[in-house]
Image 1 (tube, rainbow, N blue to C red):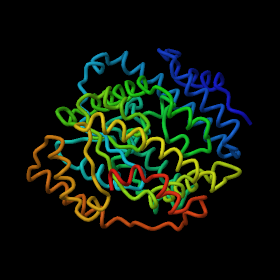
Image 2: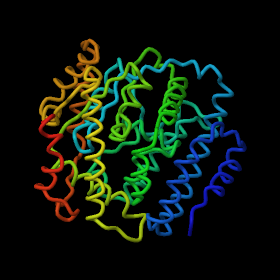
Image 3: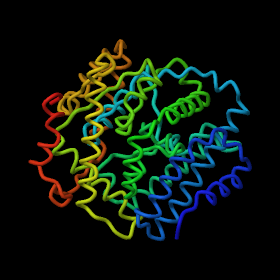
Image 4: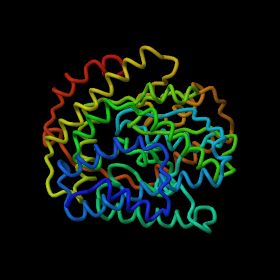
Length: 378
């Protein structure tokens, strides 16, 4: 079983009934990804079938995006005001902060269902078809990885990482999270992602165009992927600030390795836990080194938020970040924050078991490798 880029393109064209891809720049990342999937990922039958379907669907969405822009040329003039991208290593409170800020009536964010289905189906009203499909897809994902909900709270109707929109560019840290594709991951972190982030703006335009209630609101995005392209984010969105969540890496890195293992296990015939741990430790050293450099050169574009502050005083943290973004917190904002905090506490949060050692890591080695980061930010 081997994935074939030409066959994927042909299948997408047949399904979309269009071959108007426009700029074919995306073929480079797609080819690198497919080669890594074929040679490194060790996909089982389920993994191969899923990957073939998923990659075809992403290509179809590229074609449908161009059709939507042709049918609605005014979408290209939609003003997207992205006020913040929340970053930080995974497992550092970034999800809590993202969903908390997104509760503000001044702000808006990408919801899970529209990240997976950003374009309307024919005859659809208010996204109802897509919401139903997203809910079913979420049920299937949780069935395939039962521990996922313990590791990362997922809901089809909650704010989710905007980087999911960039799946369609095939430049996304999600791919080397979901699959064992180290050559792709190393390549990605040296690739100029400018065109990918320009397309991210186009996806924001499409979502805002579909929902008039977003007019006048500021967008807040979130993903650890943005750490792979901090300067690109800041250059392409000149009004955006990076909200960086900070936590002790001796907890964050093994926790993420455990999540990667959990996510990828249904789709591969073999896994190497120590290799997963070493890979992500090295990747995070790399991106945090770049972060420190960008932070030093452009300190006015960053807001630093400690993990402990987020979990012990979420309301105060939200108020602080809003102020740093130049926004005034009114009564309606504060009530929205309080309501979300209450709802978040009521949701079930399990715990997953793992050790650093099973992923080839140790607290001592992590402390040594990340000392440059912890001494500066923690």
